[in-house]
Length: 79
Length: 337
Image (cartoon, rainbow over all chains, first blue to last red; front, side):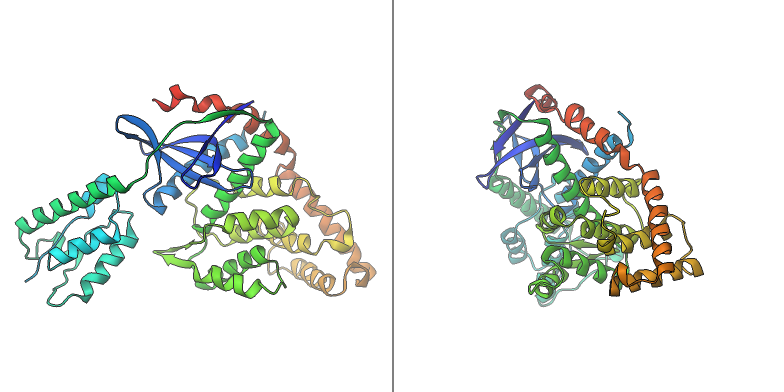
């Protein structure tokens, strides 16, 4: 299967494992294979889509809550 | 002279916090300062601003109630100027913000690899989130801090106390819940979990038991499945009866949580006492009757755990890997919406 990855500000390469929409914004969930993960917000900058860091811890928490809620639903479904 | 600057809602609208320099610029240009920011998330900036304001001379501090009720006497022109200053500060902030163009590269990966990425992130996200759900009780919070400290450094290691203290120092109360302000906690826990699933299990359970309220609906299901995921490769009952001390501790807690026993009942106390003897002298050190009771307890807990749905794990992983996280979900068209 195909998975997308890209280099973030820290110079490290991350896989994009999910997209989350929260309060009208779109977020990308990035993860490395050492279980390190991070979130970036998709933002329009100079008329182009870009990603930027989150503004505050609370924003991070909200996205994580959405992320967990999204996959909790998957837990409950039987294949 | 008293000047009031109201910038909280303005910043909230623009979702951009002020940097330290901008805060200082505001304070330097005005005599100061009241910062209404109840709905704004940028508490750190607010605290800093108020701290600076408190150090200024000749500043009368209004309460929120005074301002909201119109009892605070301030000049509307000053507010406008302050908002202009805030606007400039926000524009500066905008310039400082780093924007990376989205240029993803495609890579072939196995479903197993994706599964591992997702589970690692879910586990980390759950730990971080559960930290914000922990009880309002200071003592309980300390217990959990120590627990996480133990996980991060391994109980008994030389580094244990240091690590525990670092975590405790980075744990702070925010309103009525606590937050672990330590970015690598999840990573530490996952690292330990890979070696010692029973301890991880206890940590999850500890956090669960100490929750006073849920921000997530059905949080217990999340914890339960996370626990199952992490210990899937290890038997929760441990094949070797002589090495299931952690499990018995866990089983005692969950038996009460799931209503198998009343904590004050004589039946529970009897098992509790036997488990303590077990921890002290091992299984072989127990009397024959006690061994029978422990085995019966384990069998009862095994059935309880099975009822919680351990068998659902493979289906869950397959679904996560094959359906919900296909890379096509994040292709350029989707991102453009």
